[in-house]
Length: 252
Ligand SMILES: [Zn+2]
Image 1 (cartoon, helix red, strand yellow):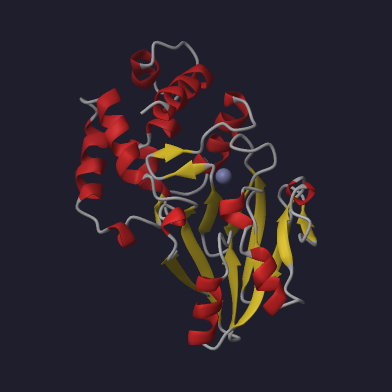
Image 2 (cartoon, rainbow, N blue to C red):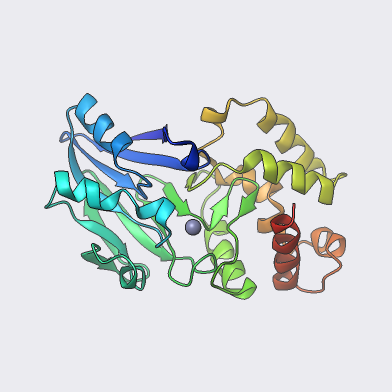
């Protein structure tokens, strides 16, 4: 499998990232298409068929491209996790938590990661790539639109338990804003400062995907159980720390 990371043409989706997995049999799987035109253009340019559409959660900036893609590829399966299909009527392959399935030359496993939305799934490939949707972002995490801080913390812990070498393909690039927020919050944190110094030198196209190990050291939202982070947030539990961080980040 060859992984492609693309930007959308429309300014509305400036922070969204489009991930396409190219399989050796001249087919490709697209993850969370916000719009179809970039996908169709890519498939045409590389002479590929659409093998599958993979959906992490119901928000329009992750799903709005589905109808147009299906108009072109009516037999293409739309895969998601249990609960997401309630709002995405085109979904026809529903995975339970921990279910896996083969697409082209890879295997994917669904991981329930609720919090941003009540039904939210990350998908882990057997090659060590995680499509984290709007659960985990570089140096950040998704907003709590539907779930509780407890739910999101459990989801983040699940992702944190994966190997450091896991390649994180997250739904948005908010890395620079997350870096600014985090440094304001903990200006003396060495791991964070080093991560931010590295990050600001990267062209935006190179900021994603990234390695989970980097975030385990630097992402405050993944470190909400560290005494120093809890103390800085004036909270006694990791759940409250995460909630406080998220609240402050919402108001940045
Ligand atoms: Zn979302």
